[in-house]
Image (cartoon, rainbow, N blue to C red; front, top):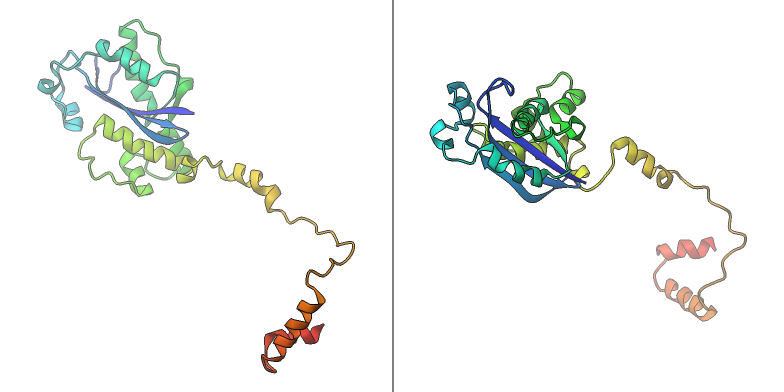
Amino acid sequence: MREIVFDTETTGLKANGGDRVVEIGAVELVNHIPTGAVFHEYIDPERSMPVEAYNVHGLSEEFLTGKPKFAEIAGKWLDFIADARLIAHNASFDMGFINAELARLDIAAIGEERVVDTLQISRRRNPGGQHSLDALCSRFGIDNSRRTKHGALLDAELLAEVYIELIGGKQAALGFATDRDAEDAYAPRMRPKAVASRPGPLPPRITADEAAAHRAFVETLGDNALWRRYRDAD
C-alpha cells in the first residue's frame, strides 16, 4: 500500500479568501515504511506575505519571489501522489489549500475519501491529550529538535513517524495487524491442543550392548550420581 504523508505552508488561514500555498513537503510510505522518495517545493504565492504567517514559517516574500508558481508544479505534485492515500495533520486545512490551488487551474479536487487525518486519529486515541505535532512527537519520543519553525518537508517527515506510532507503532511498519486482529489471527496457534494417548510404547532405540555399557559406566560415577536415580526407577 502506497501512502503520501504531506504538509503545506501558506500565507494565512483562508484557502478561499486569497491566501496561497507557499511550500509543499511530502514523503512516500509503502506498507508504512519510508521509501526515501520525497517531494519538496517552495512556491511563489503571487502576493505579499503577512507578518503573522512569516513568523510561523520564516518564508519571506523576497525568498519566494522567483520560485515556481503553483501552476508550474501542479503536474509534478499530482504525478508524485498519483492514486496514493494522503496523510496530513489537520487534513481539512491542507486539503482545502491544495484543492483551492487546483480549482484555480480548473483541475478536479482531490476527494476526501483518499485522505487520512492524523489529528482525528490522535483525538480518538487520546481524547484528553494534546494533539499538536510537537505534542505528539513528545508523546512518542520522536526527536523534533530541528523544528524551530514550521517547514513543510521536516513536518512531513516528523508526521510520518507520528503516523506510524498512531496506527500501532513500529509493529505496523513490520506488517503486524491491530491488537485485536493479531489476537484473532494467532488464537488458533495459542490455544492448547488435546494430546492423544500413544497406542503403544515406542520400540527401544538402543541395543542391548549399548544399554549394558551405559549401566557399567553409571557404576563408576558413585552412589550420588544422578543417573543412578533413573536406573533405580527402572
